[in-house]
Length: 140
Image (cartoon, rainbow, N blue to C red; front, top):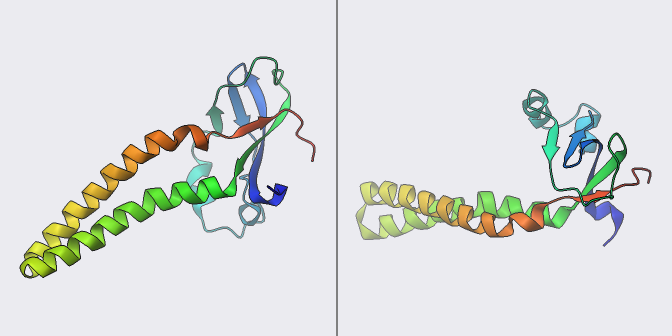
């Protein structure tokens, strides 16, 4: 996989299992101030991520790079947004076929909730694949 296919963010190891992220968001558009506005939402939140750091992989106060393949993030987004949307549409169509507006609305709500439940169950299984990789050498 090419390096461009990975999302990267630079941080500092603050403890044996904690990485504090820098000001950079990891998104080039957000860094230039041209982002979608989501950066403002996360700016107020803590910029510290807790993750398991292999013993000896990085010293406290050293700069590290966290990387994640872009395709994994794309799959996670499809899972989180796609399954509930699919459930909503499927439920609405089935409800409409069963007899009108009320069954369509009820079916869409039931389908949406079922999609959320399925996405949550699958997300728990996929969580290990969404852990970023820690690279002790922050230089490119």
